[in-house]
Image (cartoon, rainbow, N blue to C red; front, side, top):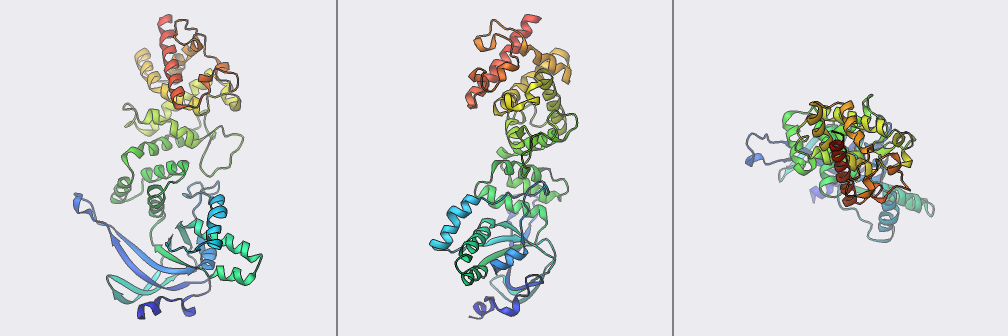
Length: 416
């Protein structure tokens, strides 16, 4: 009974929302079990468990969302359809209970005064300074649905709306830096339920390539990522280099997560990164330095640009910069790379352009009639080109890449 009375909300424990937050809280420390891993250090995670009314999360909560003003954010905008069509209905017409904890992080210092101990836990008072935000890691849809329910009910009764402001939410509070905050977001969202693909790619890249982490933390983060997923981090890192390099025909033209689509954008960074799997999974390139591989791909696409400039001047008219073209040309890249080595002993933009230029030559012996004439820009036209050049079926795209490869081989044999 003493414990129950202790953790009830009492006015003296809650300061003004704009000032310090002082609440009763349970403090626990969770540890990993590295006993089966040689050389691993034991890590500790400190948690504070309490409850806060919705109005406090509204006033003091924050979400590290990715948008043009915060390009390193790790969360997306909430799903309005899910909130309006599912969660508000659940709150207003069904059980209306959110028993699972909202996970937040406080990046600032906090003060904790233990009062008593039991079962390896501590009961006490937690004080969060007025300057600190409660960064919501998991639970933004629950908070947003309560806010939306309050707006709707407020149109009927202000008193009912105030009841929703007092809706108590169980809260788990972390005390970690931003990087570990993002790692917890990835664990909760990408491992336990799906997170949008484009954001998952960015999170993987951020976690794998953050170079300022302590060695044991970096190793732990890599351990969270399935080996089969590591290619995504490499692909997104290379994509970002290609999108930022001043030499690149793609510079600023790949729409990153959180960016509003602008006229300059001709493809999504996520789509480009996904299509790189045909390269970064290849044995030749999987261990190649990312910047070296990115420079090779910049040269490769600059060579493609010189052969098909229209595709970049009017990208909406052609399929080269769409799913079809990105995947076909990235499937073709390992062949072009090895051909450059065989032909000239080095790999430069000029040599790659020389190899790729054979696509525009006639190859009357090609088994597929669509590839017997030169593959000029008209072959890539979105509405009038042969279906093989605009199909988005994975099997067709692979067939396209194989036919392009064969065409180069036949044209090189004829011209030798």
